[in-house]
Length: 367
Image 1 (spheres, rainbow, N blue to C red):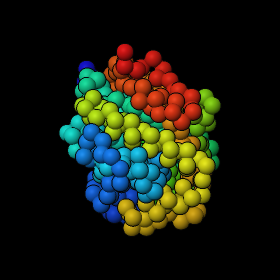
Image 2 (tube, rainbow, N blue to C red):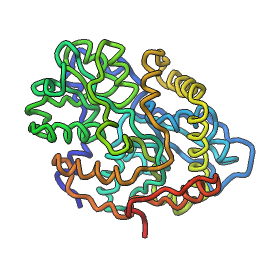
Image 3 (cartoon, rainbow, N blue to C red):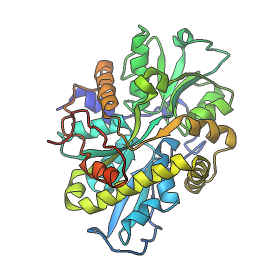
Image 4 (cartoon, rainbow, N blue to C red):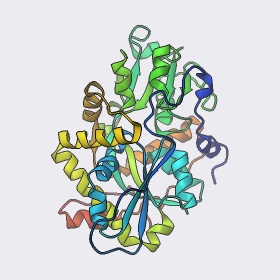
């Protein structure tokens, strides 16, 4: 079982204390956990559970959930079973909610999914589907940073210690031949763990020189004058890597397979609608973000952000394994045992019914 490394990932500490002049409300996308219990079950047959509790982040990389919630596409597939939604800003808090039974299913990034599986000895969750690829960029102050070599010696934000972007940035730093203490973030580059809500104001104040962040935070910084120095998609084969998965508690999957299948069917149909109607889907996601945060994203933020994200049902399992290797190499995780982290049988059943091709678990599925 992971020891030191998983403890670091579990902590996931943000360094808001290092930015005392900034407030948590500065550019909020919602609180750590905002529950929406206003959804009314659609007409239709109730499934094996009265309610399914679904968690997601109010980020564009979780747009499948944003749009599926806003447009009622998930609820439609659930019929008389009610969808209850909760929003999170950090992977560890969503994993904690899943493990405690506060939510049943969640949209989440790969690093917290890996850690959540590892720290429960493979008994807590399963990844049951994909949702999105891409949507992560290294954006910098163009007055201070002209090329990648100028990153050395600068202060670059990531959302949280051990989160998906933090792991990716630490791996990229190592590939440049630079050294950084993964826990403290100190070294040839200063890695400043900063909540996405705070990052735009941190950039404006000069507290950071750039950030390796997901959308829409990256495009928010660009709107403040930052420049995109690197798109993480360019570092991956076929420019595809998992940024958002769908997870479920193993207990809920065992007890309510029909509900899980209905959520997956809703997710597949939502992704299909998003890809067929990008402008309408973008507007729906923005409407939901406004409901959750109090304000919508301006066009100069949401338009470039939306274009950088690919919505896919494929969990891109081989890239999750690579991301786990990056976390191990960075010293954030002891080599995890990921056998059984995927159960894609329900998703492949849904895809077959939709006339779509099956997706692969890269040898990490349940036996």
